[in-house]
Image (cartoon, rainbow, N blue to C red; front, side, top):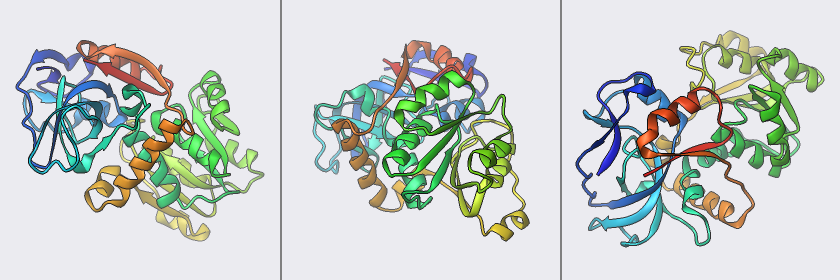
Length: 322
């Protein structure tokens, strides 16, 4: 099969488009012919400096396609089924193997490209808002990186739950596009001090919940945006600003909470998160949640796709198509 591979981490230019061996179908899973790859933020971070599970390495968390082979314990999956899969690597290729615990049937009527964008972004947003963030109607949430996949999903879900939704982005134009999805107040972080602006628009109170995906110095700023008993859920380091440091002593007077979150850990430790993702897929298929696809690149142009994302040009998901 063809795959976008690299032999060492670095910038997008490390990608090579080469022939590699097909992955083996797992006993408890499936082998799929990939139809669409959703490039996740973690994919770009892994390519830039993550561990190489093999050399050449095929990066990538998430993709969707059609089942080509099934293992002996694949459960209800059968050859020809449309599925979306996640895993620690292997999505940037023509074929991908995945355990059934990390596979979901694509609901009837849902385009496979849209399905390819759902589990990581929408599952992460849902868990961070409700399972870990405990968001309730009438509360206020701040979504960092509102134009990202997780951000776009979170804005919609929080709005539908009856929350007031604030979000950050790098331009007014990107914030305007979030308005129809449920954004109440946008903050252009390139022109505004985040903490001061959040305090201003909330009348000095702050927000009940922050979904923080930027990391670095942004983490401390997010904590400073919290209202009394506010919660911050940290989900990534997209800003690449190094470790985020928070003084616990600053958190005590307001009884604030900081939680780290990784969807993969939830999928590994039980069936709750798997059922949640299946439900979200059904909501997308029904039209109550919208997947926003910014641009599609051929798999052979993975380097250009990663560079496009890192240039902060995208609004929504960027796909690779084998």
